[in-house]
Image 1: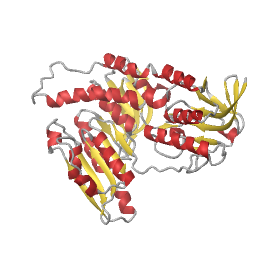
Image 2: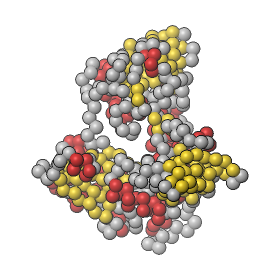
Image 3: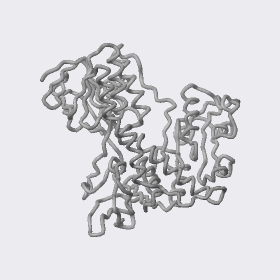
Image 4: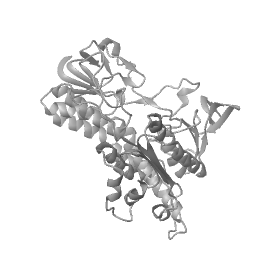
Length: 449
């Protein structure tokens, strides 16, 4: 069946829903397509369910830290099956709710894999949808590792659906997913191992604070094996074995579960982008500063599917709004990622916003660096926090905050204040002059600048 639309959106996550809803409010005829349950990565298999698990794991860790300091944890422990049931109260309603929202807005919804048939049409199943404009917002999926036994790997999606916690888990990768899930697994009683091929994990974060976090991670019993490149996975009578290459030779890591945590890429291979004259790279569709395809002006991309910003939920929503504005009123709104904060939800969390000191030095900027371990500060001692610190980069001449990097309990909230300062141009003295509520993690800001 052939149907005509002003806009067809591939995906139903944050970016897709934002642009579809905005254009529909302008009276456009809009269709959305998704081959997976409606809702996208964040709501179903990403940041939202992950944070539910992190919240309970954090509670278990807090109980451990406060043992003998006025709290008797008794038999307090993490009940994984109950946690999964709790997590599903968030994820299970999403697909039906998202589909109902589309229907109420008058957005046509199609289930199936999209495939372009020319520069102005998409096929999904038996339906051919012609369009005036299209947006590719298909999210991301685990990247191919091209190793032996790759089919034996579990994905991050699988981890979030585990009915029970295996005794031994190996995570391949040294980024967000590996560290966050290893911290959760350790609090659930698993023996967790991280295999990272480089010498420095969490490469997007401050190396000094990463070093502190890695040391803390190891102190929890989590093995962090650096310079260790996964070469394959094999199955034996005892379970699985992750095989890795190191400078010392081959190493083998027995496991009950081996999780692919080595990055995600947009699932664009079977969209037949060549038919639509849409150029893409590994990171996604190549776009200009307006999120418009550089080779087909009728098509835009947003969120993880665009080779533009970081693969983060706030970026997806932001890019969805930019794509919508430019579609509706013509290209006028450009990308601006200033003040984009990022968080690794380990326990405790590691955060970053703005520049690293290496980048500031490379640009020839004159700056002062404030770098401190804060485990002795009241805010850490009060909750027996064993791993905390910060690094702030401030321009000498102007007092402009160039970058902020925070590790510890509450860092995921404190970093948002630094994000606000960087995006709006607040100076260090402005943060020092605020009368912060005390005692809070926020009140530490006056001593961090």
